[in-house]
Image (cartoon, rainbow, N blue to C red; front, side, top):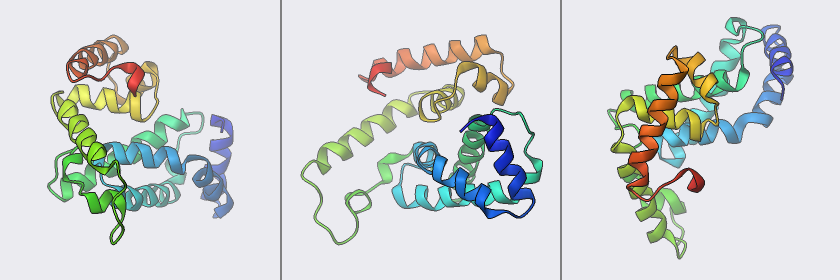
Amino acid sequence: MTDERFGQCMAAMVGGDRSGLKEIYEEYMPYVYRVVYGVVGKREDAEDISTDVFLKLWDNAASFRQGSPHKAYIATVSRNLAIDFMRKHNRIVFGTEEETVEDMAGAGSDPPPDTADTVVGNISVAEALNSLNEAERMVVSMKVLSDMTFKEIAEQTGIPMGTVTWRYREAMKRLRRYGFDEGSE
């Protein structure tokens, strides 16, 4: 979806036309879910918050600035709602270690054979992300989970682009010590 088309959908929403919301939902639900899940680390919470993101888009359609990069806007709304949720529930951001086997496999079902590997992998990712300071985590989240460019991150955060790229490089150096690299994202 282009910035122009997104703007048209938002304008339609301002006029009460739900088809604009439906089009944005169908295009961006997986993207929003990835952004939110990257913050909350728990499937059920990510599903609920992702739905709330679209309600927030509907409620705030009139405040959207036409011509703004829409993907960055969606990522910011998604991330902010997820962070608000984590603060409200006194949980650590990027705390995937609290996800249980039942959370991952679905209540009442047998866990898949590779559940242990998945849990260990999630804990490793959480440990790696927790090794970063908050500013580095934010940049990595926006770059990797939200698939934003350095320029978009700089615009959204008000941080100079040089600082954004420096934080990302420093964060990636630290993550490589945990066995993660840019190719494994």
